[in-house]
Image 1 (cartoon, one colour):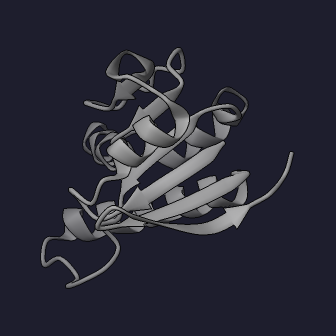
Image 2: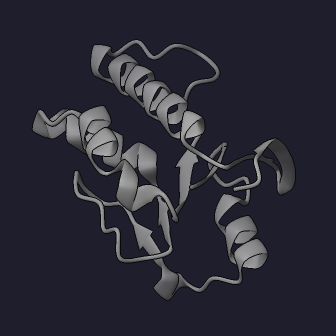
Length: 128
């Protein structure tokens, strides 16, 4: 698995498309608490986490149970763990759960990249 994260509108999706020669048809765009493992990449993991919370599902359990299906995927997530702590309890929980999800995926990834204003920062690279 390859994990790519960074702030909103910082170029994560464009980075993945260029580096791995992908098109929109190769990418699953998260919109709810369901993941589609048929595509090469999954983007919007933070949206998946929030929708799981709203529906009473455990995003970490879903990710753990599908780690084998994520093995050869590229996962893209907005970094929502920095900055001011949200005032709303739900938003704080979402932020925390997204952080836990990113930790889980980082441990199971062969490569981790942070994208900051279009600049790539390689945080982890392990030959498989």
